[in-house]
Length: 255
Image 1 (spheres, helix red, strand yellow):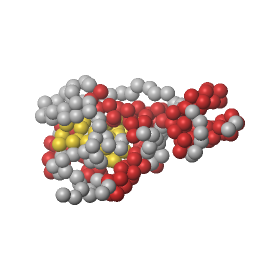
Image 2: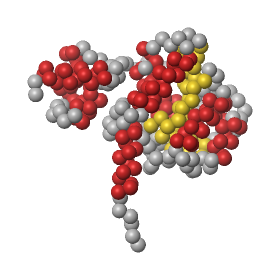
Image 3: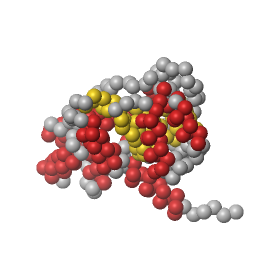
Image 4: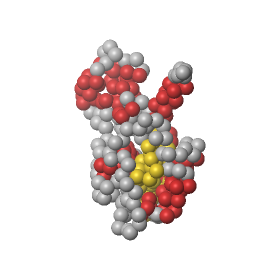
């Protein structure tokens, strides 16, 4: 294999993913396409070509924990492994700048596949924002019970409205320690990725424009096309489909 052909393949993948992929994800994509190549070689060719993935930046914390509402125990304790689909969900809120003002985004992520399974966007960061995201998730996942739903101690998650949805559907509320971003690292990681790969390059004029852009990123790219390092560089949708197939085809135990 000559360098020219490899370079063209690397450039194509880099452009297809809008400069979001570094050498590791490009290497994994090349492997999927049948290329016999090493990751160090891909990294070296990218350096020669001047291709550099978008770099991460810090983002603003939106938690409002100055309230007197009851808070839940931390059931995760920074253990972000899930045994199955709908075992552990995590949720958080971030902000998106637009010319009209802030747009607040709430997401819910299944830790098993890292898929964004529910989301909601609004101009206000109220309880309705997180309730809408949870209701979407419940509908999409066929209303499972016993799921751990982990959040921060923000007033939205401690609200009577949100906690009623939790109780009505037999879910288990879990909350991070005060001021500890590591307790909800999966959501923090997603928001960082979203900001780097999409938001920082955009100048949204309206909230509706931002909503459309974020919807497309989540549903048409992140869940279905973007390889995730924690699930062996599969996409969340691909990982769930494979695991469902394995469970379905697993021989039943007989007594």
